[in-house]
Every structure is written in C-alpha cells, then in structure tokens.
Length: 324
Image (cartoon, rainbow, N blue to C red; front, side, top):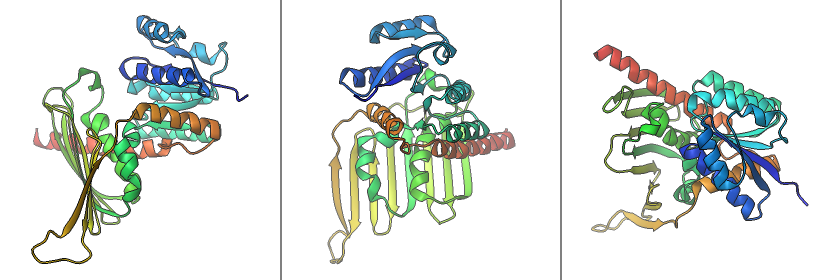
C-alpha cells in the first residue's frame, strides 16, 4: 500500500483555509495525501480551522519541522512578506512547498528558494491559480505564436489584498499566463498607474514588447464595481478570447476562401463547465511530489512573473515622482 503524503497548511486565513479544505477533501475521498495540521499566528484562527477539519492546530510552523512526525509537503498561504522565510525553512527541512503568489517579495528571495529546492531535489510550486481555470486548460494548447495579447483584470475593492500593489495582486496572474506563451525576453516596457482608494497603486496599465515582436497590453484594477477577467490573444489568421470568470471561449479564424459580402471570419463560442481550480492546483502539486515531476507552475515561472511585476511597479513609482 502506498504511504500517504503528510500535508500541512501554513497560514489559514481566507485563502489558506481553502487549501486546508482541499487536502482534507482529498483524504476523505481516499486520496494519497492526508492533512495532519494547520498553522496560523492567530491561535483562534488556527483552532477554528483545525476543529473544522479534525486536525492539529499550531501557532508556529517550527513545531511542525521539529519533533512532530515529518511532513512531506506544505501549502504556504501566510502573508506575502513571510513567504520567503517560511518556504526557506520548510525546504531546508526537506519539505515540498506550494507557495501562494507572489512567490516572494523580491527576486533575490525567489532565487534563493529555487536554488534551495533544486539542491534538495524538492518541488517548489507557485499558486498562480488561473493556470487551472477550466477555460484556460481548454484553450492553452491552441495558442501557438501570439503576436498581440490584451488582458483586463478588474475586481471590486477588498481590504485583504492591499498588502501588495494591484500589479502584484492582480496583474501578476496575466503575467504568469502570457510569459510561457511568448517565450521571449522583454525588449521594452512602459507602465503607468494611479492611486484611488489606498496609498498604493490601485489601477495599473503595462505595455510590454518582447524581443520576438509580440506585444502585450495589460490592465488591472481593484476599484471596479464588478469582477472582470478577460484575455484576448491574436495570432496569424486567428483571434482567441477567454473569459475566466464565465469560463467562455471565443475563437475566430480567417476563412480559407474569402467571399465578397460574407464575413471574413468563422466564429465559434463555447463554455466550459464549472470546475474547482484550487482543487486541481492542489492535486497537481500532490502529483508532482508523488511522481517527482515538474510542477505546473514552477518556482522559476513564479520568479519570472514576479520580476516583471516589480519592474512595472518601479516604473509606475518613477512616473509618480516625475509628475508629483
């Protein structure tokens, strides 16, 4: 009988609680993983989630890396500024890590985690959830050589997301999606943004030109009255639109033979059924640990998205200094 992998979740606030529920659900369904503990600096939060899922509660993850039976894997869903220290200590202890996005606060911190995971032959996965959206999974392989990409990611204001800029909170999702698609270095970057509800940047736009000629225009806002998550991809003789919220995909292709008076494009629209992106993400992480395979979103990919997001933030900050 295959030994079950022992899992814990560090940081069980809003998002971490969902991680814990997914591990518990996998175990209840007879999966090859079991949730043995949850950790949160707030004892009441840790206790509430632990009681809900019938596991042990801790206020310090160091207790789990010490005398407690050895962990195999953890989800790190604590605050962004703690990701580096928590993930570093877990990797150093031989524990595989799924770190929520952004992977760390700085690129240097991300590089340290990647090197540590490589040295210890451990899985380091980053929680870029949109990679597991049913619409993206359905259309990803249809995108071959994009020449222009446009993304709009809008969300109502939520106080729990303001520890980072809108670029690191929202736009980074689209950066993570497009970078593997394009596979080319950034040649030129222009960005602007404004503060509306917080002291940080709440609306941002970035225009990125890549060395292969592809251009991406990304807009993110956390001051919208409604949620909107759309990506449009243009490639030779084809246009693909993805609505992540509605899981709707539109594909328009140039007709082989153009007939005067008729539309030049054949259009197809289809919608994917609802899915559980977080469950799919957690399952992918567990499978990567079990099989020793490359994670869907590697530490390097999380690091690359972070690097450009930080460049965008720096450029916006410089513009503010210039015009203030």
